[in-house]
Image (cartoon, rainbow over all chains, first blue to last red; front, side, top):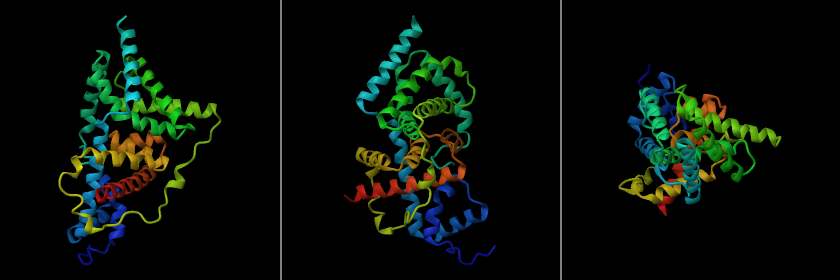
Length: 87
Length: 202
C-alpha cells in the first residue's frame, strides 16, 4: 500500500465517511486512509472532535426530563399499574 | 469502542442490566421507570410518528406502549434485550394504527441523498472549547434541531444517540438496511452539529 498522498481522500470525502468510520463499517484500507488523513489534517481532526462532542451531548438528552404533562401522565400510568400489582 | 461511547461488552452488561431494571420495576421503583422513560420516550414517539398521521397520535401510541410494557413485563422473561422488546411493541402498535387508517407510510428514500453536508471549518474550534457543553442551553439547541429533522433521520438519531440503541436494534425497529440506517444517522448528526455551531455562535 502506498504511503504517498495520505491526503488522497479529500476533506469532503472524509467528513462524509465519519459515521461509517465511527461505526467500524469501513473496509480496512479506507479506514486506514481516514486515519492517515486525520494525522495530516487539523481541520478534519477538529471536525471529528466536534462531531463526537455533538454525539456525546445528544446522549445527555436521555437524562433530561420530558415535558411536565408527559411525565405526569407516565407516572400516573406507573402508579396505576403498581396498585394493580399489589392488589 | 462504538461511536456512542459504549463498548463491545455492552451486550453482556445489558442483559444483567435488563434483569435489574425489570426487577426494580416489578418492585414498584418509580425512579427506575422515570429513567427508562426519559431515555426512550422521545425515540418511541419518533418511531411511531413514521407510521401514524399526527404528533398527537404518535404520543398516544407511545403512552399506550408503556402501558403494554408494564402489563406484560412478567412475560418478557429475558428473551432478547428489553430495548428490542419495548421498541417492538411500539412498532407493532404504530403499524396497527396505520393499517386501521389505511395509511401508506412514507419511505426513507427521500431523506437519503443529500446536497452539501458538513465541511470542516477550522475557524470554529474556539467556539467548541471550554465548558459550553456543560450548559443546559446546548441540549435545548440540540432538541430543537432534532425536532426539525426529517422524520426518518429524526427517528434514527433519537434511537441511536439519545436512547443508546445499537445499529441492529435500530435497523430492526425501523425496518432499515444497515447502510441506509448509517446514511440517515450521518445526515442527522451533520445537521445537529451545524445547529450546535449556530447556537454557539449566537
